Structures are given as structure tokens and as C-alpha cells.
Length: 49
Image (spheres, rainbow, N blue to C red):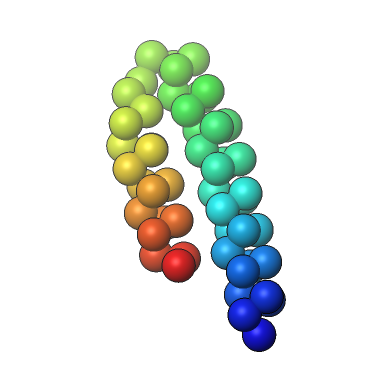
């Protein structure tokens, strides 16, 4: 059971980080601040643990 949870946590981390990279790129292209996106991603990662 622990191995499954670890695998799920890692998968969530990969998905969130991949999404964050795309969001930051889009924000930079549009001249927006990416700080709030990073904070939201960190909160999602913390909640998933």
C-alpha cells in the first residue's frame, strides 16, 4: 500500500510541475507575474502529501 501511495505522490508531482512550467511560460509571454502560479503549485503539492 505504501508503494502505491508513493507512486501516486510522484505522479501528482510530475503532473503539477509539468503544468507549472507551461503556465509560467505562458505568463512570461503575456507579461504577467508568475509568482501566484508558483504559490498555487506549491499548495497543490503540499495538499497531495
